[in-house]
Length: 246
Image (cartoon, rainbow, N blue to C red; front, side):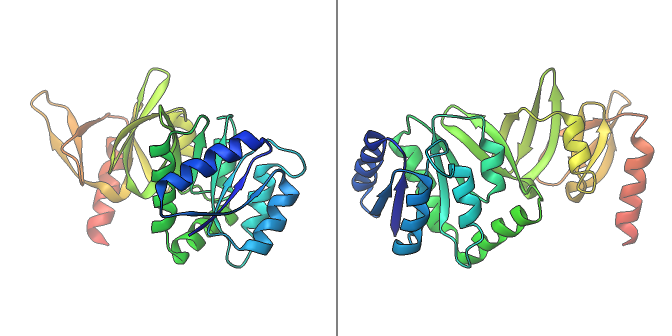
């Protein structure tokens, strides 16, 4: 598969090209030093993947990605940048990954493997969600960089002081979104069961009484039992009754 490397600094392009050469299964089809060159090279070379810096002369990487996303058959975009403050904007352009410099070889390999696994239908689905301004992924910061968590894989969100823990099919991560923001954004998909917890409506399967006399939510796919407050219990019971009727 062909890769276009876009960065305004030649040493950064050379480093990425050397790392890609070591991986073996990829070909650097070309390079670009600014946004205008990137667009021209994509039009000429038709790469499968674009490794794209954000801050550079001419159109920024975000602007380039937005324009690429309008193509009938856009390449997969992986942002490679020293700046972590544009992650949300980056994924709104349907980028599939966001790597922070200095990029480690194993992290680059994982991103490229993900790009290779994504078939055309999946890329178009990512683009559709971006076009509709619908967030289908949650962003979390790990030591290895920025990671995407599909919203459909989330079981619940749990607030703990200044952070929120997201429990999902691949494990747990800390995110910076507030529980109130998540509730407002995903009110049709997640339900408040406690001042500290939101659960996926699709994964809410029942209630059970604990030995302490409190009521706990039973969720599909996890043994975790989350307390349901008295305030929110009537709503949760109503949702379960409606699900049984339907």
